[in-house]
Image (cartoon, rainbow, N blue to C red; front, top):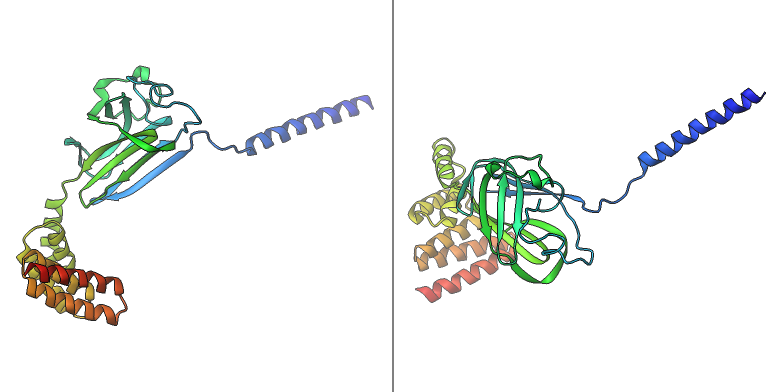
Length: 286
C-alpha cells in the first residue's frame, strides 16, 4: 500500500513539473527592445533594415546609456542589418548590393557610421575589426525639439534614385544619404521595351519629364500615348506639363484644358485643380 502511495506521489510530482514546464514555455512577455523591420521600395529594388528598438525610459541616452566615442551596435540585441537590393553609393562611397551590419560611434558634434561585413558580431564590439568595414562615413547629429522615446530607423526623402536613412532617439537625429545610379539601366530598358512594345510611351515620357531629359523626345512619346488613349486625362496633363517645360505656353494651355474636360467627365476633380493651376502659370509665362 505504501509503495502505491509513494508511486502515486512521484507520478503526481512528475506531472506537476511537466505542467510547470509547459506553462513556462507558453508564457509570453513583451520584449524590452522589440524587433522591427523596415522594407522600403527604392530605385529598382529595396532598402531593408532589421533592428531592435530600445527605449529611453527616463534615462539620458547619448553620452550615458550610449557613451560618446564608443562603438555602438545602433540598436539592441543582435547587430542592426541593412540590405541594399542593388549597387548604391552611401554619402558618395560606392557599395555593392548586399547585407551589412550597421555600427556607429556617436559623439556630441559628429557620428561615425560604419557598414560592416561581419553580420554575427552583434554587441560584442570588443572584437570589432576595422578591416571588416566596407564603408565609413561621417554625419552631423541634429537636435530635435520633440523627444523620440523609442530608437527609430527610417528611410525618408525617397526619390527615384535617392533616399536618406534616418536614425532618431531621444532628442537626436542623424541621417546619411543613399543613391542608386539607375539612369543608364532605365534608359536601356526604355530603348529595349519600345523596340518591341508600343504601350509604355506614357511611362517613358513621364521618366524623361521627371528626370529633365530631352523634352522633345518626351513630347513625341506623350503624343503617341495620347493617340493610344485619347480619353486619358492624366496623359493630356503630362503633355501640358512637358509643353510648359518647353515654354510652349499656348500648347500647354490647350492640353491642360483638354485634360480638364476629360477629368470632369471622369469626376477627377483633383486633376481639374492641377490643370487650373498649370493654366494660370502658362498664362503668366507667355
